[in-house]
Image 1 (cartoon, rainbow, N blue to C red):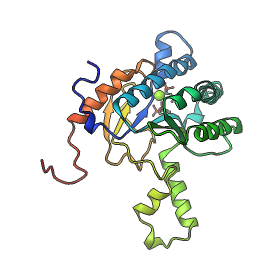
Image 2: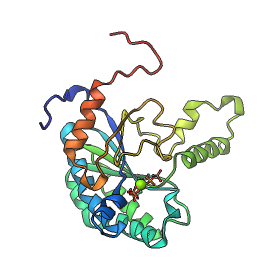
Image 3: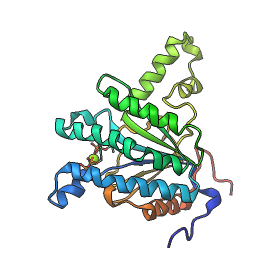
Image 4: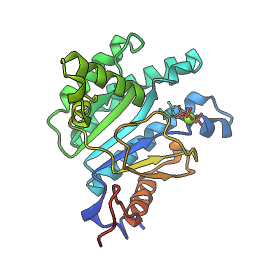
Length: 240
Ligand code: IPE
Ligand code: IPE
Ligand code: MG
């Protein structure tokens, strides 16, 4: 089917993706959960290429939540190392594709310096690229992001009656990031799990049973088709 049936003039500008189901994918094959995370790399790169083909400008992927530290230490250690290793091995490839890499999330004591250094280097290397902005949400929590934004507003000395949505928006982790038009979650779970709470206020939500390691650009295209069948109203009335 390819891009058939997709109107390239109205593709979502920003797609957010909850990459879920790696553990179940592995379990079904009798493999350790970490093999599922490893298999997710191919899904991520195919999705990036699919986003580039469609002309999607922003792609934000949930790689590790503020709650994922609760997982067994071995899995956490694997995920931290895996995220670093993807940047080491594949940053040049993303750079060649014109991808601008950014990160979103809390930089607290739990995130090793080695990883933050690698994040900064990848963001710096790719900062001039404009084909697609790929934001990797790592140690990201939507509630934490809102708390951090409010703290920053208060630290600026803004009077309580002057605190408005714009002031908070300005202090989110990436002030330039537009709100997602479409959020896709894999693995059949129908929840947000603390992802982009502020930004998803009016996003279209699409859920698929496909497990993340099996996700490919065709599934992204399906989600975009579904998005284009929706009618966004933003609280108003349809005036078509
Ligand atoms: C998503 O897959 C990856 C991360 C949360 C890091 P899971 O590891 O949550 O896989 P399931 O949901 O247990 O199958
Ligand atoms: C959300 O998935 C976080 C990421 C994909 C990184 P989880 O697997 O952690 O979410 P829950 O626990 O099912 O809500
Ligand atoms: Mg999960």
